Image 1 (cartoon, rainbow, N blue to C red):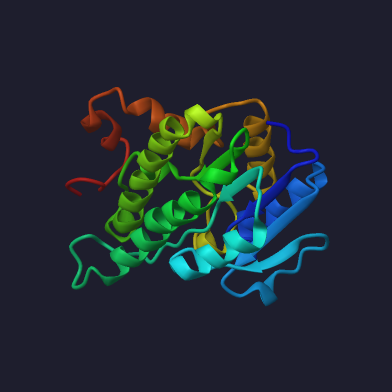
Image 2 (image 1 turned 30 degrees about the vertical axis):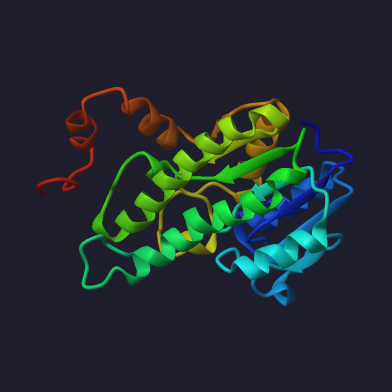
Length: 236
């Protein structure tokens, strides 16, 4: 998959990684980049085509698919984190996370998959697809684990039409979602460069940073060994 000369769509493109994806796709020669958001008036990226899209609303997804028509590259970037524990007083926010991160991604993929023969899909997952860290991130982690499984499943289902499906996994990028955390963060443009380099190289997964690589490597080990390195993660 080469981006130059292709038609692309990015979900959640009004800020953060989504905005960086839209800018980078244009820089790599994409002929048309649809930058989508619930509020397209908040998209301020020269050269893109702003498009209204609420990935949790099937009618909005269908309208966007009808507007776009044929497509070569789909970037499923839109996602939310609500700091929801799984055993909190309500499951409302956990459901919101699944509605966006899993069902929303699936909604958009189902709508555009028939147009992506010979093209590519990139799904933004997370290091938290592979582990749980703290109660406030457990709903998000569960939804991202489901999105990773979704990514692996659609890769198989779209193989006959030669649609490449790539996952981008990362720990912490310098986006609004992580603004409250005073820790080292990857610049969004660096993450996007790695992701699109991997997409063009035909990679099935792009691991953006060493914390994510360490988490992925730990999956073959005893989980007690992994959690022993995270003070307080299990029993305080």
